[in-house]
Image 1 (cartoon, rainbow, N blue to C red):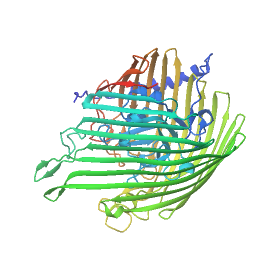
Image 2 (image 1 turned 30 degrees about the vertical axis):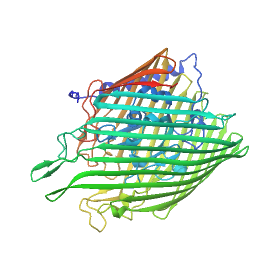
Image 3 (image 1 turned 45 degrees about the horizontal axis):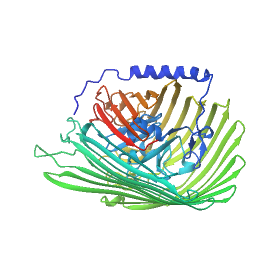
Image 4 (image 1 turned 120 degrees about the vertical axis):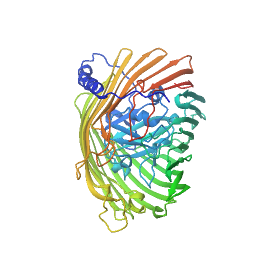
Length: 639
C-alpha cells in the first residue's frame, strides 16, 4: 500500500474559499453571456414518473449523463455520486465494502433507489446496498432531491436516485473496455446493442462485467478486530433490455440485472489473550427483473403496466467467539420485493393528469429467525402537472396502506415561474414517510414491534438558471422529520434490551442551502457545488452522525479534439461518527485527476488518478480509505 501522508490541520479551508469564490462569480458570468450554445434539452423521468424536459421539472435534480460517466474514469458508483451536489458517502473500507449514500442529510434508508424503475433495498436493514451496483453497466443516473412519497411511497424522504442501464437502438453495435489499477484492481466489460426489423421494432442490449481487486486491510490497527491481511473483492454482473413494438403505440419489454459481489472484511477475535484470524467474507447478490407494457390507448391516454421483482441477498461468513470457544458463523439476510404498478397518463393540452395503482410485497428470510416475515402495501396516487406560459405547477396525493404499519397519506404542491427564458424560480411543499425496517420492528433484543413510520414535512425554494452555456442552482430546504427511529438506551419499553432498542423518540431537522454552477470558457468547463447544511437531532440537540455541515466539489474540464482531461477536488468538513457526538471524523479534501484520448474512431484510452496528494482520511471511524491510486483503461465502441 502506498505510504500515508499526514493530514493537514485545516484540509478544507482552501477548497471552501475557492467554492465560495466560484459561487459568487458564476452569476456574473451567467447573465453577461452575449452568445449561447444550443444543446439538446436534457430529459428527466424520475421527478414525475414520465419524461419531462429538465427546464420544466419543478423538483431539484441532477442528471449524470453517459458521457460524464465515461469521461470520469470512475470504477465505483459511490465515488461518482460523491462528486454531486447534496450527496455525502460513508464506506467501511474500499469500493467492495459496505457503503451508504446521504442525500441532503437524510440517511441511506430515508431515500429510494431504482434501477430502470425497479425499487431496490434491503427490507431488513433498510436502504440500497450500493457496493453491489456495477457502474460499468450504467448508462445514466438521475438524482431528484426532496420528498417524493407522493410518487414512490415509503422511504422517499431525502430524495430518489434512479439508475438507468444501457438500451439498444439502431444498427448492431459492440462495446467493451478493460482496465488495471492500484491495489491489483482489474476490470473488463463488454456489451452488444441495436435494433432489428423494418422499423426497428425489436431493440436489444446485453452487457456483462467483471471487476476485482486485491484491496487493502479495511480496518486500522486501532480496531480491536483488525486483521492485517488484504481485503479484496470481486463483482460479476450481467444486464439486459429487450423490447418489441407489437403495433403502433404498443410496446412490450423485459429488463433484468444480476450482480454478485464477494468481499472480504476484518473480524479478528481475541481468545485467551491471543488474536484468532479467519478469512471473513460477505457475498451480496442484487437482482432486478421487470416485464412491462406501454399502450397508447387514445391520443391523450398512455397506459403503462409493470410487473417487477428485486432481490437483495447477503450471506456473511465470519469467525465468532462464544466465551472461550472460537467457531465459524454464517448469517443470511435475504429480501425479495415484488411490485405491480399500473400508471395512466392523460394529456390535456400542455397539462397531464396521472393516476397510479401499486401493490408492493416485501419478504424477508434470514438466519435471524425473529425478522422472518412479509408485508404488503397497496397504494393509490393521483397527480396533476400544469403548464401555462411562464407558469408551472404540480399537485399530488397518495395513500399507502399496509397491514404492518397502517395507512399513510402524503401530498405535494409545487409552483415555478419563468422570470426569463433562462431563469426560473421554484417553491414547493411535500410530506413523506419511512416505514420501519424489519430489524427496527423485530430483531432480537433490538426491534420494537410498536414502532411507527417516520414522517417528514419539507419546504423549499430555489432559483435555476440555464442558458445552454452556463448553469446555476441555489436551493434552500427545510425538512422536519418526526417519529425519528433511533437506538435508545435504556429502552423505554418492557423487554430484554441490554444495549438499547430502536424506538420512535426523536425528531430531526434537516436544513440547508445547496449551490451548484457550471460554465464553459472556450475549451474549458468550470463547475462546482457547495452545500451548507445543518442536519441535527432536535430532541438531543446533537448533530446527526457522519454528516458534515459543509461539503462540496470544484472541477475544471478541458476538451480539445481527441483529448479530454480534468481535475477535481472533493471536500467535507468535520463530522461526528456517532449520534452521541463523542467521536470526531476530521475534515478532508481530495484532489483527483482524469484524462482520455481518442486514438481512433472507435478506440480510446482513459486514466484516473485519485487522492493525488495521498491524504489519510476517514469516512467511518477506524476504517481505512485508499491512498493515492491510479487506474488506466482502454475502451472500444463508446460514442
